Image (tube, rainbow, N blue to C red):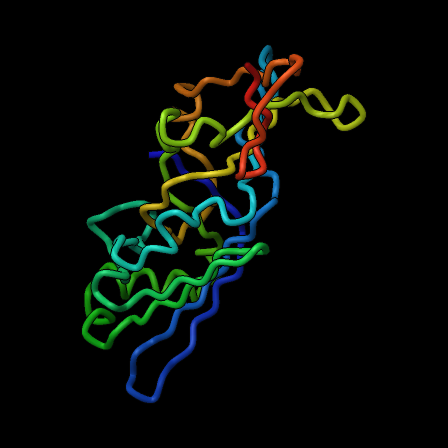
Length: 205
């Protein structure tokens, strides 16, 4: 599982029933700095393109969870349980989670609510997988950063399988997963190619 992160907005509102409505927003098109490159490497950045998560988000039968810190042992809501609503747009993926009064009595949920109210839970981080190349050959691309901006390698994700969203203290990618991924810039264009419907790189023949 790969993890992304952004300090998207989190808002908590109390309903008349006593349940809490947790609203969150993960914006698309923002560059996340995954690594500064250390002493000898190159910086790595990642961008999740608009509607990159649409494959599973647009299928209500696909269960998606809201977790604390990417832990399935600490769920807050899920689409399968009818307590998580998702809305996708070109700007952002937004969600509303219904935290029932029963869930509020669970110790880890109570800890989360106290931590959030203290201002220590500030980010939203999606847990996702890149689809197999045979299913979507242009799910991602890697490019050189504009020399005027820096020397980073920039990965753009156009299609990904979203399994969960997490509330986190510091949105970031898992460094071990990053190191296992292939960070090679896209090849220079050849003479003929096929355009990706996801807006990804040209797949050259």
